[in-house]
Structure formats: C-alpha cells, structure tokens
Length: 350
Image (cartoon, rainbow, N blue to C red):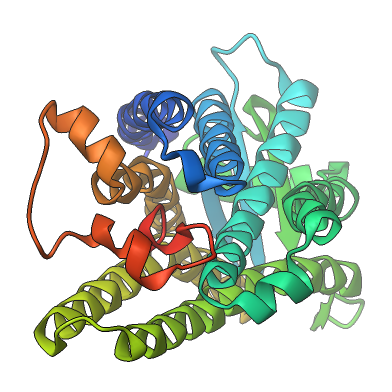
C-alpha cells in the first residue's frame, strides 16, 4: 500500500519545479516578444503571447490544484487532496473543472498554431482561410474548447454519493486516504446492472466522445499541417536561387525541427492522455501509476518556450548578449522562404 502523501510529495516537487521554470521562461518570452520582435512579425506576435499566457495560467492552476490520477476497474478519477488546503471539497471540484478547461484550451492551441504556421508558407491558403475575420475565429477556437471541456467535466463527470461509496474502499486500500478528504471528478465507463454484469454508462461515453473529438482534431491539425508546412517549404526552397548545399541544409534543419516539435507534444501530452483513458475503458486497472503518466503533461509547457527563444534570431541575440553570424542560420530564411508572408515558420513551432 502506498500512501497518497508519498505520491503527493513526489508530484508536488515535480509540478512546482517544472511550473516555476515554465512561468519564468514564458514570462521572459513575453517580454522578448513585446520588446525584441522583428517589425514584420505581424499577427503572429499576438498568437505567441496568447500561447505563453495560456501556458502560464495552466501551470499556475496545476500547482494550485496538484491533480492526481487514479484508475480503479472501469473508472478514471482525477482527484485533489484538500486535507491541509484552504480550498475545501466543493471549491476543489470547481478548481478541477477550470483546470480541465485550460487543458482543453492548450490542446486547441497546438492545432491553431500549426494552422497559422502553414498559412505563412501558402499564400492561397492564408488569403482564403486566414483573413481578418477568419483569423479572429481561429483565435477564438481555443476559448470554445476551454468552455466545451469544462462543461463536459461539470455535467458528466461530477461526483455523487454513489461515487463516494464506490471509491471509498479502493482509496483506503491503495491510497490510504478517505474519500471525504478529496475533491474529484470521476469517469465511470461501466457499472453493474441488476444481473451483476457490466453495462456501459452511455452518458460517460457521450462525454468522452466529446473529449476524444477535441483530442483527435488537435492531433490531426498538428500532424497534417506539420507535414503540409514542411512539404510547401521544401517546394519554395527548390525554386529559390540558393546553392543546392544551402537548400539541402535548410530543408534538413526544418525537417528535424518539425519532427522534434511534433513528437514532443505527442509523447508528453497526447500519448499519456490516451493511455489513461484507454485502460479504464477496457476495464484494465493501472491504479496509482496513472499519475506518473499524467505528470509528463506538466513538463511540456516548460519545454515549449525554448525553441522560440533560440530559433528567432532577435531573441537569440538578446539572450546571448551578442550578435551571432553564420551562413547556415535558420533566421536567414526570412527573406528567402517567406516572401510576401509573415515569417511564421522560423518561430515557435518550426
């Protein structure tokens, strides 16, 4: 038996460390964006600030909430231990709801970012789908996802007297804690019927189908527009007057950057969330270790600002406090690849 306090201490140190690191980095990045951005950056500057602010809010909420994930049979529970907290049980539930909404907003931003990036290298796509009003709608999508995700959690996964009784013994046996000492949301895929057989809880599957739509659309946009962005950039480079060696070097840099910056959210966000949702759905229990899987999500916001800081030439020079030279400098792509377009792909998610 492992006490919740042991997991709480381990995860608290992890979340405080990564959260503090993320807040500092994103705050510094916002200052760089405001004071050191290239003049021709355009609306992309506001998207970067938007992303950084969401990640800061997400990290603050995560440090306050200190969420733990627990699976038991066909149920997934996200809980907050409030025994020594000023935020009591009911308030803790609402805190988890808001925290979930912020996670949904961050997911949407992954996709929005790649859509906007592709618009930088495809003039036809940008003029058709990223005009002034349509761009506003694109920026509004993450807020829609936040409200949508929070609403699903609030209406379909809220606790009840029955769920208290269901979790009471498993929590005592595996967490050594009382159900009265936690705030939580519960995703119960199946329950026993009158004949003692498991039958689906259709309201849960409806709620989960909504979250799967949000997850899949976000992942699809990252994957699809990431490939499209690289393909289109490669075409532009081949038509340029650069030497073949220079063109191949830039293509290789762009490909490596795209692969790495696509794999990071897949490994740290999409995959852990998918695993923790899958096992309860097929009535397989991973218990306490679900918290370890979900802990990887808190690492992503701490890594996300780094590519922007070191790929954008203005930001890199400010950080290094000196001018950097070099023929194969990815910052030099501005005037080569993105003629008549804001140089989006040399920034946050190349």
